[in-house]
Image 1: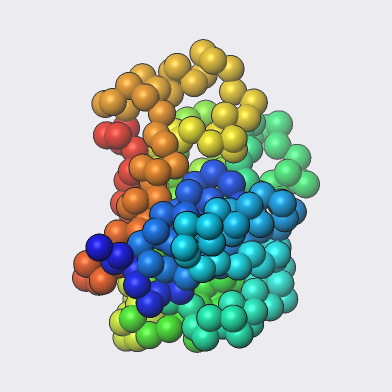
Image 2 (image 1 turned 135 degrees about the horizontal axis):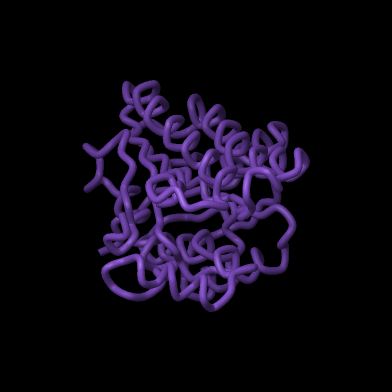
Amino acid sequence: MQVLNDKVALITGASKGIGAVTAQEMAKMGAKVIVNYNGSQQAAEKIVADIESAGGQAIAIQADVSNERDVERMFDDAIATFGKVDVLVNNAGTMLTKAIRNVSTVEFDKILNTNVKGVFNTLRQAATRLADNGSVINLSSTVTRTMFPGYGPYCATKGAVEQLTRIFAKEVGYRGINVNAVSPGPTETDLFLEGKSQQDIERLIASNAYGRLGKPEDIAQVIVFLSSDAARWISGQIIGANGAMA
């Protein structure tokens, strides 16, 4: 059953990783999909082509989520194409693994701008432009619970996302919009694997009950559920998708 029939989903950072798989899974479930990207145009267009070849509908829209005018234009283009936006998935993000003392101001500003300001910008648009009875799913991280050394700035940004999630849920609930965050554990994406030794990866694999890395599909299926009418009464929640890691 296509549980997202007649819904339009905007997914930020959807050219690769969890975002790309989420776009494909949502299209399979009947949604029309906006594949947002910043710099990876070719990858985003391939996701659109894959969706269309499978019988779905999708477009790619370039926008830097940390830029408020880009985000406003993205909503303009999405609504001009499909008439509405029902689902917002805030997936765009960047990761930094360094001890706090070694993080430069430039690095801190970059991760803050993408991971926090980017979510703030899209939520501000969604407050008035997301369709009634829509859904917002923000991507957090299990590091907000595990608090690994070296993840200080990244953990701080995801903690901010979780608080924005809880408060925004109460601000837009009167319109029937549910707002939740999904908190993945270590997931097999380029973003996660970059810069990690095999020893680091094995240590993280051993930290969950299944003894493996998560797959993007594991996370995408939770996002699909939270976007469906079956999850209508779930809001303001931070949902771990991490194999019992924490």
